[in-house]
Length: 107
Image (cartoon, rainbow, N blue to C red; front, side, top):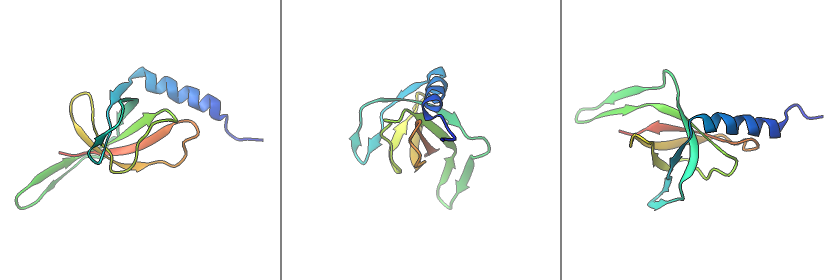
């Protein structure tokens, strides 16, 4: 007996993604991948500003939700619909129902 109905969870995640889907083109190293549909959601209270002697850097985190075939890895980069640059910092290992990654804004 299984605790989870992965097919139903995948269907539910696809519906959530479709509510506000955008298409992103991930860059791995210097190579762009084909555009992929995802949903990006801001993570509350994850923003921070770091100031150095000569620089100032802003960072914020988002969750990236894609289908089970989303090709995304740590250190990949992409821009959202507003042109904001992100770097992928984490890809959760369970891909049975979809791929969930975390990315941070790089400014």
